[in-house]
Image 1: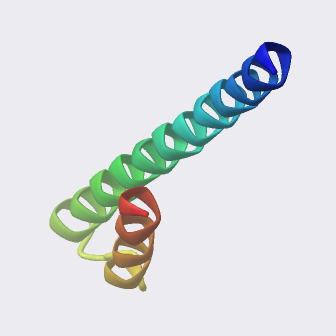
Image 2: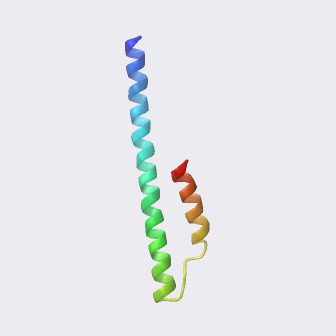
Image 3: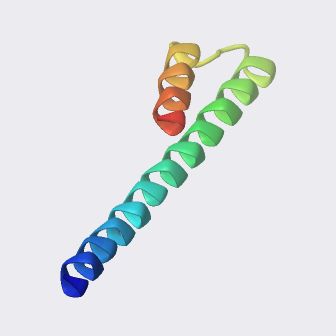
Length: 64
């Protein structure tokens, strides 16, 4: 019984690391997208279309 518990514990740790990586990558992409949108809007007068919707989806993914 001990080995089964330790196996599931290892599976949980691997899943946790994977999900942390996905969340970190999503936050990094969110940061880059927002920065690019602000720079484009204020310096070039050309915002990135759909940034609000993408930001909403990314935040929902991170919270989930």
